[in-house]
Length: 348
Image 1 (tube, rainbow, N blue to C red):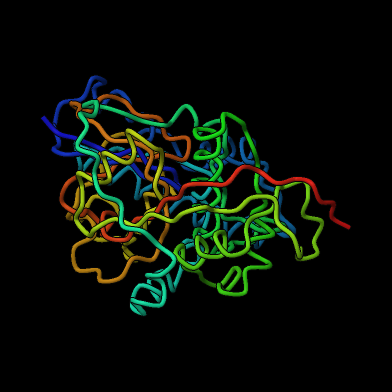
Image 2 (tube, rainbow, N blue to C red):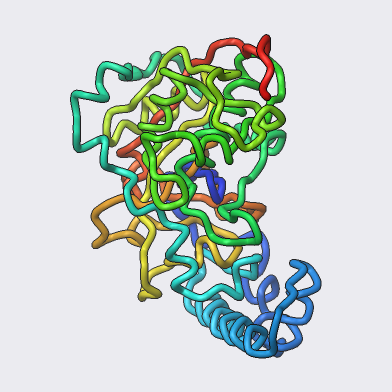
């Protein structure tokens, strides 16, 4: 039997082994994409995702992107039995546009070592018994699956900020039983330790939350604040390959921000860009990321478990093989203890 993770397209979950069994027949679930013409699907796609274009040439470019991805989905579904794919809002993006969503510098501060160490505390597993399956998915849905799109739908390399704030919002709900919404734009615009929409480090973002703080969504009016609504009390890091500590923390405390490798090319493996541009069922295998060195994307680790390939939701979440540091997801993990919200000041 195998274990798996739940991930937010800014999120992740853990798994152990994989089964070829599926509760829903593979050929029945996805056979429509093998028979339907891509033009028919693109008409429906434009209606669902409100695509409007300034010129016939832009429409032609977007349709060609969609058609290429449509046939990639069909070929992947024919080839692999453990993971299935469908269409998401990114299906008419080009490969270059999808690559823009991958943060170029997620690992910089880790290489610095000691300067960051004084801000963090290594989490050690409590030794308590934890459930076989556990997930904060329901609470995550009270937050938001954030979209890496800036104004007018332009891609923003902001997974570092989106992941941090998703984790903080869910942790606040767990620790203080209140729902809050923090400003992604404020963190992207005003965190000078990171590089805005160009790149960023989750560790630097967490340290910013400890030293300065974060701002509620309704309090950010486009001017970087001098005071902040919410601060981190303590930052937790995890030993590399520390599956037990990750599982213990998730079950007892909440979600974790992690970094992962994202393949750049469509290869002979079960996952490349399709993780983001296509949706589906199943568990991403560890070998999807072999040959890659540095993590380029940040996601939220929400849960873990064991199962035999049942259907899973694709509303911004995916599952990843657990216990083998798949895509380096167990190597760069962080979470936090929070201070109570401070909203005694006004913003002008």
